[in-house]
Length: 95
Image 1 (cartoon, rainbow, N blue to C red):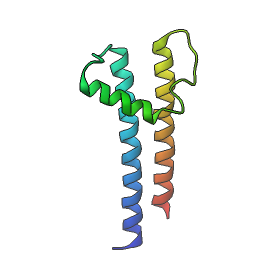
Image 2 (cartoon, rainbow, N blue to C red):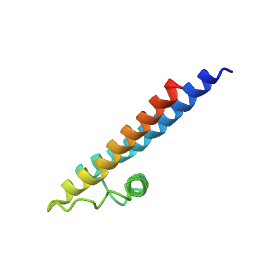
Image 3 (cartoon, one colour):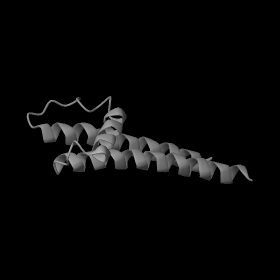
């Protein structure tokens, strides 16, 4: 295997991981806004993973409305993971 092929694979893996993290965060935002059943195991799982992923940002903003705090806090984490993940992946592609 050529080093270029391995770099492409590594970049692709990093981009996919960033995408999955952003999808989980986006899914939690959607579930929250649609008032998903919090007693459901899948909803609990998504919430726990999203809370772990957004541990640094989920209470960063202090809006009066709870939905705004969720969208801003978890949404910020999703955007940061996408931007950083794809930036790193693109840097790896170039080398």
